[in-house]
Image (tube, rainbow over all chains, first blue to last red; front, side, top):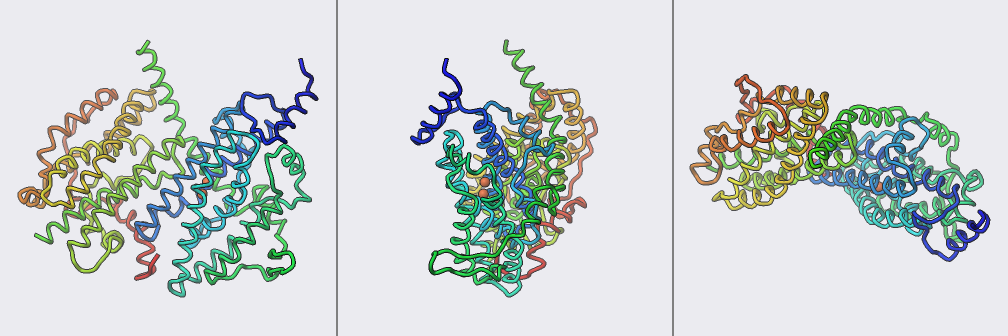
Length: 312
Length: 250
Ligand SMILES: [Fe+2]
Ligand SMILES: [Fe+2]
């Protein structure tokens, strides 16, 4: 029998050779744990992310927008499903992952702890939040774990559609009345910084990054992805004719990148710790759905067992 | 005749739209993620149908108005949906029973409307029927599963059947407008659907081990614009943006 060091060396050689790791193969326990944590966090984000947008289904301003919003949120539920399935290939059940979300041991993206206050927020979420998610997810289509990479390929196609749809909502507002344009600016003011926070702490404060890069779970650091997002997004704001709420934002001719101001890291850590404007409401909503659904799940199981017994 | 066709078309759109709006309230809150998606799917289909009817209604009216004007700028008394679809979601049992009671009717109605002499209504019916076949399968299966599931699910389902039963009679009660439209070969005399409807309901409820309530009293009025108190609240949310920001494009 091979010893652990040998197995680890073989594993790393495979990763280095860009061969995908598949569920049945040997992998370091820490790799498995890291993936479960990351994929489930991602799945929870898709599901919790349904709430701030779902908030506007009943009030969407036109039938066309309402249908598009419903379809978008339904896509997010589908992303949650693919990702829970990907996590399950690592030997953990969906129900256990959901319990971890509800008891607070698993996280979800902090962005969804901010409230969606106006219709323009639906545009801003699509443009900025899905836009930031795409940066991360495009990278993850090449992640080393096969099922995760394949889930990402499907998801990315839909996310870029969401991003365009959100941008188009804001474009309509910015080409509309003064009142509508002010609504768009207000949404950008409130969603810009939380969107930059989506990429996580600075590289210097991100202790897991080096190992994740070595295992090719991640291929770009938080700061690289954040910079990429700013570079892509600022010209889009210019085209809309609204202003990014950062007085330090400027184009650097030499680096060919935007320079931007310092993120409020106190706010970042506060929201991570549960003190964001909607942390409590989001978890309460998930808990309520879970509790109110308990009798439905029990009944479905009982019925399936009855029918199986009859079939025998 | 044009006024009648307009009102008739709107009434069909109202049924789909109000039920779609109710189902949309479940999005993100369903008991199982897969069920959440299925309810959203049905909601999407219903809004798609509502748009087809309302676009056609706007054309029939001929006053250069749009589907959104039809949906967002009519008051509660002008809505012609049946009372059943505006009833609140309640627990999942109420949502499923409401859906099943409506789907069973909707399928029979659309099958008949496919034969309409009005080409547009016939085309909408043909497209919608495919969707509603799926809705009925979903709601029938869940009615049976929950009726014959656990003690608790059975009780909840029976309670939902009792609560919603009084709103089923209106489905197959023909109004003067129904009869006028049926006589023109455009609409459906829904009273003729009643035997098939009752049979469908009885079959599924029997398999679900649920009982049809004894009391025969039935509420009506929705098809004439006399609604339950719930519709006003639905419209308050549905129409809020268009009312708060008149004349703007979104
Ligand atoms: Fe997503
Ligand atoms: Fe998305």
